[in-house]
Image 1 (cartoon, rainbow, N blue to C red):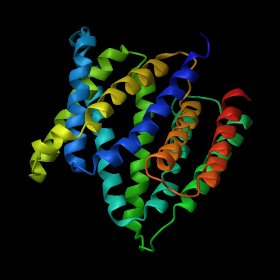
Image 2 (image 1 turned 180 degrees about the vertical axis):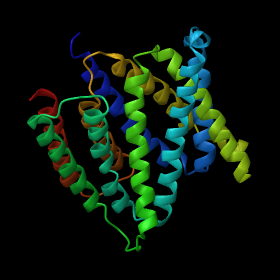
Image 3 (image 1 turned 90 degrees about the vertical axis):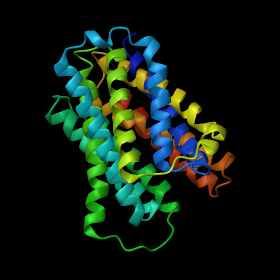
Image 4 (image 1 turned 30 degrees about the vertical axis):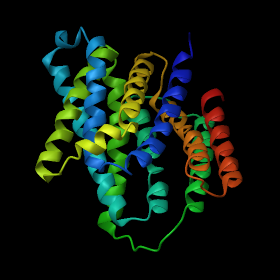
Length: 283
């Protein structure tokens, strides 16, 4: 299908949004380091039966898969540095800059067009997400320049990862990229656990059923994302906008699972985001 990649990215966004609530629930029993390592490890194990051609990949592209894993882990480390000192509401607002970085990468590196429809769509998506995060505002922690830079670097590396997906999928199969990427992510997160000398609670891990559920969601979501990137008509600028549909699941999860307030306000903001996605994709 000509525009099947649009549906794939939308499904990816919904799966990605569902993992936000799962991570919050999983953190009640396990540390962030434990969760990242074990849910990535389980995800890697799940990819093995579907990765028969992984070892036929050129060493050069295996290296690129390692670099992608390093980029994602770097983004994760910068996000932790920022979140530790920055109010969540402000982090959510700064996180919107990843769309700007992704758009710049798409236009100036991949040669994608930037139309009026895309511009209006991005504006509406940023507006909707900005309004959602303003409503979440809490605390008055002072944010220093280094912390703000860390938050921006998180956005930069996330956008770079998305651009790498589009490039790498022109030279390899989705199963090949997923196998090596997940393997390297597992090794990197494992190394972080060892360096930090974090204690692992096996008892809590056994009962933390959110971890295997997140692993399944991660594997399915990433495979869908890589397949969409391999589609010749897919564009990073549009995919970045569609990914923001994850806010639908985030808002609903916050309301239904965590009893968060201001649901009608957040739904209105979500509708603004959806309107922006529609305009960016179809106009």
